[in-house]
Image (tube, rainbow, N blue to C red):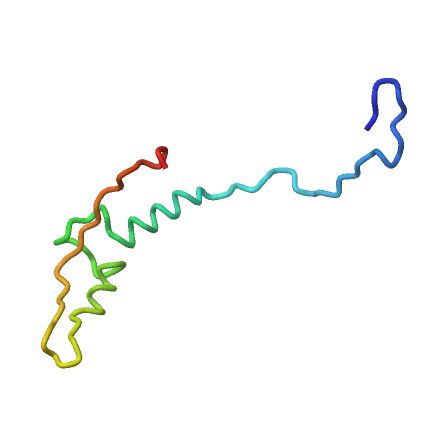
Length: 91
């Protein structure tokens, strides 16, 4: 590193071989995850208007569940996701 009054030597100089002038635009990764989460759980949809996709589809495809002797049956009626306890900023 050159100090005041010293001569800059060749080994102190940096050569930049980069060709990218502008940094690329990156997507908002948090927004992508939040949107995917909302679509999977269908958070903005009322239970009676849910489409057969996401978590609702997983439940529809795997229920009813019966025991080996067909004595007990577990049926899927609906699901509810509690709102988050903390905001993003609090986390």
